[in-house]
Length: 516
Image (cartoon, rainbow, N blue to C red; front, top):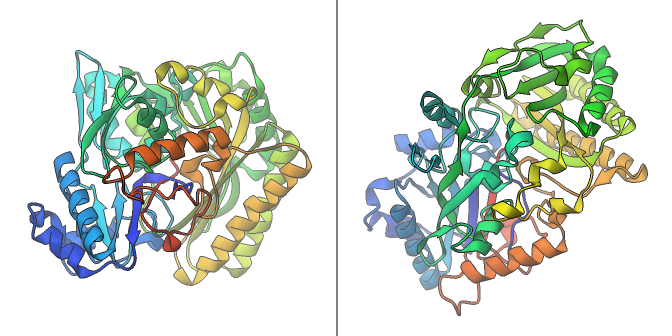
């Protein structure tokens, strides 16, 4: 099945038939990658589970294998495909950064998890000005490697976000107004296909696969290296300013004007969000300002600066690595992300705030332990994909839109497993309510950002029927171990919109954590 569930870390689920058996782990242990296999009770196994961003996603696989190279990944895929052909019993998942908060998206129970933990380096070639980044690198480490060299890439906004899923889901960076979406800054993917072959996908080689990987998640193989364009690294002026909740309407009006401005400064990035946390139980509005040139308090944010009653202000001139660190996430909570999009419209923005307050009130009455709610609003600009076709294209379907719109993310985190149903239900109620209002007011937009989508949401179908047909064709071409095999390791094109992994055969699912 061509999986349309979100993304967050380059995580991929390969459901290669019925319940996994120990024979699959045994086959790995008997191979040349034996030293990379770890079992329950081992230190490496326990450390892998403990490092997941979302507490709900720490499922216990039968074994974990941690390859070091693309050749190792190729060996692992060939072994598991061969074992499944013989016994029909192997299921496996793939994890890069482990940042997608959906159980089963980057881990598996009673199966094999391919944990790309050790494939995490960044190298830079000065002649080509290309950065080569392995899938399990975190963006914080990427920036720390490139900044001393005077170079930068259009990567994730949070330091703890993994590279793989972020790029395969599209990727929005602070630099998007200047250089486009992060996926369109990739010039080459190194990919392990279902037959174990290691190929490059770029504008001149495997061009259809190159296009499909930019936005369609891991429905086609396991990406083992991302080669990205770089540009000059400069300090940014940025940080987070916190305001009283009473300023929400002013910020919404300023955001609407900012997003609708045809002469918007291409260096100006911005996120406006409402937030409440039991750690600091005050309802607030925050603005994350990130100006990608070393200019203090640039005119692009002037309407926001009219509010002078801020509670705190971390803005300053600082490198991208420091900006990203402020958006880093811990690994101690249970997490839900959801998303939707709507036209730039003040009434719709105000409705999101009304429903947010209802959720906060419900949680104050019912929730236990520590918890937090953040609702993020950011402009998705048509300029982000203006040069996409010239760079090999992507599958997001953004050419359908002639006006900028708002992309919304709800981000709920909580400490107690007994509250899972409460938080998951209220998160869904929040986005369903906003969607209902937007449809009635004719402000709804079909597009769903894959990296923020929840398990029941369907971002790939939101790209449009033509893009779906293209993705199916690519998956059919590259997803089979042998040309005449009836089923694909990486997708099941008969059930494009089905998001229930437990019902699928020969399925790959890639999800990535919503970048900050």
